Amino acid sequence: MGSKEETSLETLKKNYAELQKKHALPSFEEMNQDFGIDKACDFEGELLIREIRRFITDKISNYMRLIENLINPVNVPIFVFSMVKMLDKDDKEALSEMYKKLGEVEINLIAVDLVYSEENEAKFIKDSFKVWQIIKKDLLKIIGKVKSAKEIKPKNNDKNYFG
Image 1 (spheres, rainbow, N blue to C red):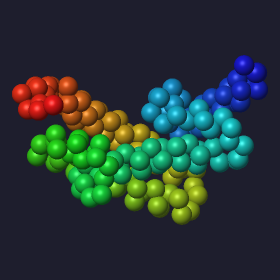
Image 2 (image 1 turned 180 degrees about the horizontal axis):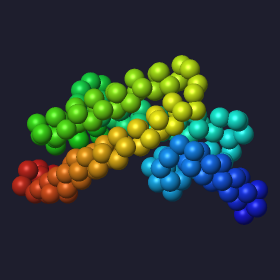
Image 3 (image 1 turned 30 degrees about the vertical axis):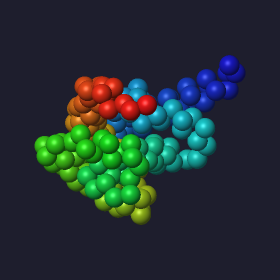
């Protein structure tokens, strides 16, 4: 592939390294694994830190909606409803706690989004990264439980077949 793509990614990594050093942000690799910030290599604006924050908030918002659907399954796709049926009380309580934490992130986002400050953007990124590390671990446990419950389901026998 062309060197332009490599150059823009390298430029992004260099610019991120400056922000990381200045604000003690997580590593580029960690941020990229969790939030896909390498897509910002096409970003040509001056406020890279704001763009990185947007990648975080997009992912957090998507997972917040998923968790909301699992907690309160109204007009959800059948796929989501089948997951809900496999959750027990403890799972739902854990999801409620995750939802609360993600809601706090969303509220913090509003404050950060209203008035730009590089320091506030950096604090939001660090705080959100920490919250995400907890959420993803807890959510992975629940999803693993749902996945294994689907695999354990007994197979249909042919006793009811009338054809």
